[in-house]
Image 1: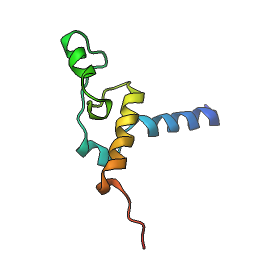
Image 2: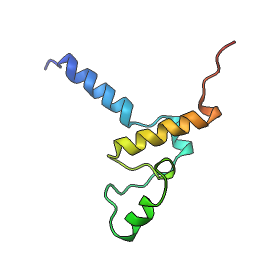
Image 3: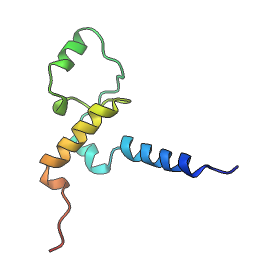
Image 4: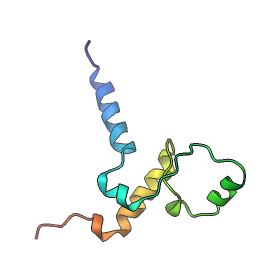
Amino acid sequence: MRLDARAVVLAVSLAATVMPSAADASERRFDPRVVVVGEAREQLKAVPITQRPYRPLHVYGNTVRRRHQRAVSPAMRRPSGR
């Protein structure tokens, strides 16, 4: 069975985008619900996107939260080596 190079690149890119790093795991909350309805949805919508919990399949929101966390957290910055 031969793998198409484009399929491999796509799979690796998707995995790198979706999978959290070990540093993220200690700094984040996780909500296993993919779809939130009713009062819980209203409560979730009232919270700014950068403070909401991470949720499966919510690529945009999770990416915004991850980028925000990395930008404001000096512990996640790599030393410059100087």
